[in-house]
Image (cartoon, rainbow, N blue to C red):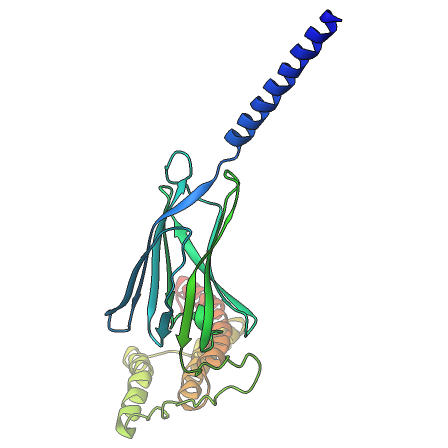
Length: 290
C-alpha cells in the first residue's frame, strides 16, 4: 500500500512537470510583434501641415482625420518583435480605407524595410483614389507574417474625405475623336528652261558620238558583207536609245519602282549586246576592216 502511494505521488509530479514544460514551450513558440513610433501627418497641395499626430499602439486617434482635394496623408511607424524589440519585415502590410456606408475598401501599400521601418502614403490625386467618395472612412492597419503569430488589425482612426466627384471612367469601347491629317502640298516642278537644259545635257553624248563618226570617216559599206554582226550592233544602239526614252518617261509619268524594273532588264540586255558588238569590232580590226 505504501509502495503504491509512492508510485502515484511520483507520477503526479511527472505529469505536473510535463504540463509546466509544455506551457513554457508554448509561450516560447508564440512570437508576437508590436507597432511602435507611430507618426501621422496631413499636408495640403501647398505642402503645408494640416495635422501632425503621434500614436501609441493599440490606442486610436479620437479626432477626425480630415482630407480634401490635393491633400497628402503620410504615416510612418516601426514594426518590432514583441520580445526582442528588434525590427522585422512582415510578409503582408496594408493600410485599408473602409466605408460601411458605400460598402467599398481602398487598399494602400505599406513599404517596410528589413529594419522594420514602414511608410505609407495616400495622395488624393493618385489613381488609387478614383473610387473614393466624400464621407467617413475607417482607417485600419493590417499586418501579418509567417514568422510571428497573432496578426494585427489595428484601427487607427476615422478619415473624413471631402472631394468633388469629377472623375469619369475612360471609355474603353466607343468612338474616338476624329484624326485630321495634314498633307504636304504637291511638289512644284522646276522651271521649263531648267528641264530643257537637262535634256540637252542628256543628248550631248549622242552629239559627240555622231560628230566623232563624221570626223573619223565612218565606213559602213562593209556591213553588207558582215551581216551576222549587224543584229548585235543595231540591238546595242537600240537598247541605249530605249534607256534614254525610259529616262524621259520617268521624268514625265513613271515612278521610281516602274523605272527601276524596266531599267534592270534594259541594262542586262545592253551589257550582253554591247559585249557582242565590241567582240565584232575587234574581229573587224583583225581582218583590216574599218
